[in-house]
Length: 249
Ligand code: PGA
Image (cartoon, rainbow, N blue to C red):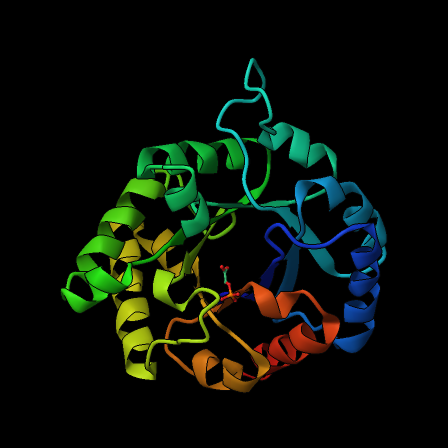
């Protein structure tokens, strides 16, 4: 049985005052053994966030890391440095990094490996553009990203895969239920082909305009083990119902 995972990605949002949200969230959800909850704030808030969650079941993650443990990389942060804050997840390969920072599958695989070596879980993001969706190449594009971005040693403990159609991120547009099922079933088959039994233990999240109003429908899809949530993870009022819907799925 795969544990479910509700992950929130604050992106470049939030300040020290936003840390109070973690306490609100903790009180708004009933923790149960079926579902993990992770919040990924900006790197400047990681220490405060892990301290705020020390007594709760909410885990903290980062949104990116460098592939090297240390060195002359001005402005970058390594997975080891992130681990020191008490965070235990790192998102890698978000489309905003792939597009805005020209990250390739090879870069993302190296970052995922760095996260794993630092003892953390890598949340590896993949997703097709609107043009690729319209051209009918979605499954091929995702398959190539999946194979290129996942380290050979991936297991359910070290890697989570998040399917995030680029055209659904922050737009309010969501793929149809059938489209989500088609992609997640295909990704599962590819994970099993590549990793054998371990491929069955790797969790598959859906991301892109997930909200309380559509969460129940999305979580009913085969092979959707949870969600990576952007905008709706910024407040406990928006995120707690998504966690509750996931627990009930
Ligand atoms: P969104 O973002 O929920 O605001 O669409 C999702 C993401 O980019 O992870």
